[in-house]
Amino acid sequence: MPVRVLKFGGTSVGTPRRLQRAAEQVARLVGSGESVAVVISAMGHSTDRLLARAQQVHRSPGGRELDALLASGEQVSASLLALALDRLGIAARSLVGAQIGLRTDSRHGGATIMQFDPRPTVELLDRGVVPVVAGYHGVDAMGDLTTLGRGGSDTTAVALAAAIAGTGREVRCEILTDVPGVFTADPRLVPDARRIAHLSGHAMLAMARAGAQVMHPPAVAHGLAAGVPILVRLAHRPGVAGTWIEPRLDERSGATAVARRADVGSIIIAGLPPLDRAILLAGLRDLSPLTLASDSPDGPFVVPTASLERSLSLAHSIASSHGATVVASTDVSVITLIGDAVPDSLPAPAGFRERSRDPWWIVPTADAVPFLQQVHAAAGLDRRRSGSRRHAVPARVHADDGATPSPCRST
Ligand code: ASP
Ligand code: MG
Image (cartoon, rainbow, N blue to C red; front, side, top):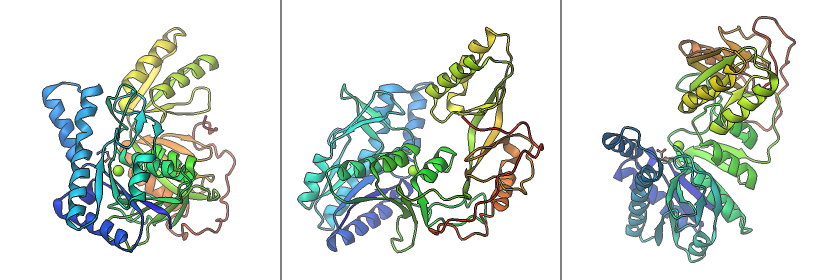
């Protein structure tokens, strides 16, 4: 029987009643002989509240002290869940990052996991004790608390599952949330969106990077690297089918999903020599791995809003030595179609279009939702039974239709 790493998200444990229900679910599983480890997020919006507090005492809080503050939200919920389990007669132990051997680099606010010692968790599991791990944080080489970036409890969960898998045990990770799985588009924006039953790890990674908020992108990457299957399902309705993210599932041809990133800005620099463009791209990727770049010589870069200011000053410094001009837009969104097909019937948006595997478009934010809906329908995602293991009939990737600026590959 596989070890089940259950990750409860913030809304799923947002009130004492929900926390109680989470404990009851764990107790039922343990009662039926399952081996369960829990990873937990901070309750409800408590991370936002802690951040707001920090902003009341400092104009731009960050670094070591902010991470120490933010990590406390998860500690609270882990201890409360362990107490709730104790009340139900289930042996449980709350654990923080240092206690589970979760080592990270020192990039506060967005640390990367360097090492994860499975022994503390596995020893508890072997003794029949439920480890209740506070997600979202670890410790760096100095022993200082670090956080993994917003949404990072997913990453704790999948990385824990991967560490346990490394001991030779069979393991699966379940992301318990307030949506019943991964959809072909955000169902709040696209009413025709459908649940996907089975999804390849690569497609999920592309979706997470393209802005689908179901999972923290590094979490998907950990699952892929370690071959850990991930189930995304409703937290308090364990019987309702969710989405299986299967690392070894073949990539399907055709379209899988469409996603939107609204938290971006675009940068266009005309007339930059190729070498300088490559240097700029490397610098932008250093600032954010989520940077997108068109492959066409004067095509746009897309960077997350959080790193836009620093990206722009880098762009200006490189452009100025060539007398090139930098044009930035902030009121834009990126729509990405996950898959290898650009539908024929798609109307050209008022914006830039990049043709590639996982083609993307930059559109004015005001047009983003209608365009998302159009792409979803044009790709046949509202009709096709998504998620079957069948390979869909590949949609045609057609030749240049001339309707949009020089389509090309993405780098
Ligand atoms: N509590 C953190 C956040 O709100 C981490 C998480 O929930 O995954 O971002
Ligand atoms: Mg989350």
